[in-house]
Length: 470
Image 1: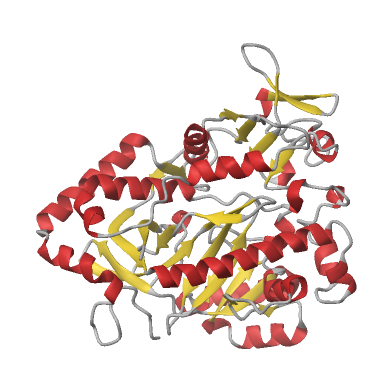
Image 2 (image 1 turned 60 degrees about the horizontal axis):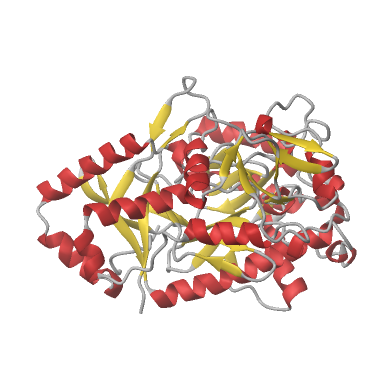
């Protein structure tokens, strides 16, 4: 496979936007680099930038490995990406409004109605609910990869509770602390203002008539794998971090318990899945949610970000239709490509997938975090046979895609500097007014040689992402 290298061209020459960094790297003694890497590890441990890994010993915390060779994106490339991301997220929000209101796209037959209405993530309770600014996905994490010839593809849209932005911010802080001279040499677009932009977006979607909204961040608590991020963002935005037990609903209004008595809450940035939000409506056994929350939400007295029911648009069986959504709602051609996708519930697609399993990537439609997937070229005969059985038993539960030649970037590993595969997750913030994003996003890197799975839960690491300003 031909892999596009972010730093070097096919002839081995340095790409123009990496020239300054490469000159610095050549001139820097390896001992200094090694010392700085150790310093970064220590600092990350001290700050507590860890995540819990489900399925391992209970409560085991892991440090996400951080690589000090940045991923550098030239400004023209970022402008093109940004334009495509805005278009995509705008269409997805229009789709969500539509499927919970007039369902024009379903009536037009662009997407099979049963695939939306029977989807486990479709929430009938949201039918007819008018969310502020018609925005459902206030925070969208779009996973982007670059293939063999350097072209970008959207791998998936994360619309429920997208995570990882704290690592983007901490990676930048760490690079600036370790190598201030690099930032003196390069015009790197800033990302530190992300919490301010996020807060501004959350305040902009407060219920009607609220001029000075109280915003809170709702976390499942300290045992959640992204708890560090929840505390970090609440602190950076200057809002209260709350758990379900800190909130209560009275007369369809949400209140927070405080030492000064109850305080009304207007906007909840929730990091809890739909199923656990309100035990009166969803899972009755949920101790994480707030009884009566959906009643207050449907009455328009509180805004939830992201909205309930957004998961129907990030389901992998709906993903293949996003280009059609863009054409249907915006009358435009998609600026960013989807990865060609086989829908296993279609008999012809299933036959093709079963015949080509060793060369495809197969994913569960509801899967996340790199779990429940098969990377054909890297799998054993037993794993392929197991997936064949799963596909035959429940074809509608899976999609398949060609194995993309993910781009790679030089990365510090045990044997020195070697290329490793990566992706990019920009964070797109929407309110009724406009769509913003800070330049770049979270670059995740697969640290195992040859691996195409970048998720931290599967041993991936992160890099700072530099968007160079003109």
